[in-house]
Amino acid sequence: MEQQRSGHPYQNLTPELILHCLESLGFVCDGRLLALNSYENRVYQIGIEEQQPLIAKFYRPGRWSRDAILEEHAFACELAQHEIPVVAPLSIGDGETLHELQGFLFAVYPRCGGRWPDLDSREDRLQMGRFLGRLHAVGATRRFEHRGRLDVDSMGTAPREFILKKNFVPDYLIEAYSTVTEDLLRKIGTLFEASHGVAQIRLHGDCHKGNILWTDKGPHFVDLDDCRTGPAIQDLWMLLSGERDEMREQLENLLEGYQMFYDFDYSSVILIEALRTLRIMNYAAWIARRWNDPAFPLAFPWFDSPRYWEEHILSLREQAAALDSPLIL
Figure 1 (cartoon, one colour):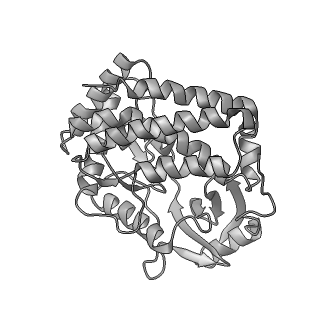
Figure 2: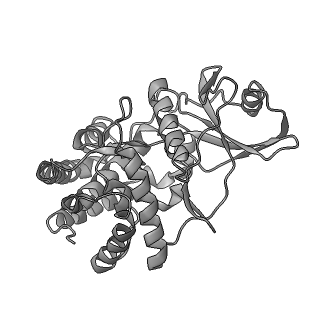
């Protein structure tokens, strides 16, 4: 496997600089600093004298343009203005939500607690569906100009080409990986063409349980870092689990709540397995692209092993079968 560990984007993000960034905005830090679970960006809980701690998010240099980050912030603030529970960045000074110091773009958020949702009950799924319906009703009112679009090229073709170009796959598995991914992308392309008329709206984009916190008041989102344009089903399918009949019941519950606020295009359900496949492919390429960041080999030590790629190819073959029999409501 090709490895490049000569440097990484966060090598200059020291604890002293992190505190200095907050103090440059007028906050008085008390020295407490806690790194939170985040790999793509760096996120910290920072103690503030005589106030509640704040959350500071340092964007990975080079990943998003300033305009794309500001569009993420604007979307979060727009949702909050509609009383949809998301954690929006704080407006500081002249109303700025994005700040820069020594080459790092960062934002500051209030600390919001909660637990990951179980979604084991029908009532929880109805509530989650209402939440997403409200979010999508706002998301459909205008367009992103600087955020990415969920499509086969960016989520499937480009990741496949990167994996093959950078020699991450062991030699004896290259043909198998190349063949199965080529077949998958052909099938996915056919499904996307069949759903060409499905509306493309502003989405959360990465709506899994780890990005949702649940309190006695219900769910709220803590991260819109992957918000993008795509079909509404993208924000629903990652909340499904279990066997096909279980997923069908879960989706029906979610949509029962969802359609109280926004109409759902049932023809987009055929994209669930296509979107799942693209996520599996893109996830592997995401780790590969970040392998020069020391946090990634520590967090994903199994990635640099033949066994991982054997299992990855097996999961892709399973997806090839799933694509031939998509979930239907």
